[in-house]
Length: 220
Image (cartoon, rainbow, N blue to C red; front, side, top):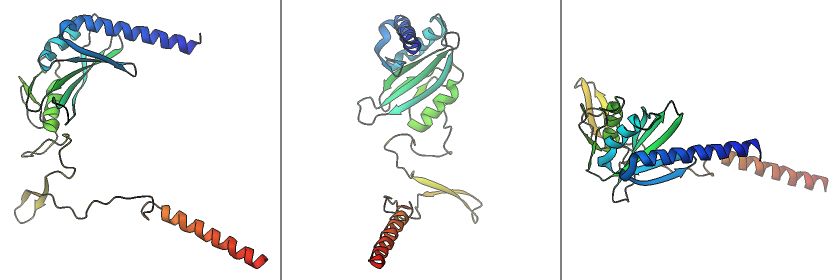
């Protein structure tokens, strides 16, 4: 057995131990487990998010005390359109786990800002980008978009160009909102486009062929 194989076996054993330990902590609230590229993902119900994260923080034996990421993913074709994603880190164990909770459009998720202070900003970002509302949040306002913005940009049905644009109006002396007005249409570029430089390479190749033909005629 090579040293690399031995390390992989130890890593797999450590991963399996983490999986079993977290499963025992979550208990009946667990809805599914999957392992992908040596990362463990646990699926739970939205209503159980605070209880599960509290248990993992205080009762895990290693203390998943850091919420390193809180985000969402949009799956428009699913009955429960979104997945809330919580990335947890245990510094003492040097291990990471992912908690996922499916949630439908218009459903409300419980805030975990009272458990992890960083969630105050993360939940505002998820609300702004995806439109997922968090009950119990102390100050749920938009974070990345402007005041008066309509829609949620990371939803996959949100138009690529947005719906409004802003500019400063010299006559009014303030920023104004207007419908999006594109200066040119979208264009699809292919390998024959001179913008890409492929056309130039083809011309050079043609010139070389012409030169070789002319040389053969002279020699003949």
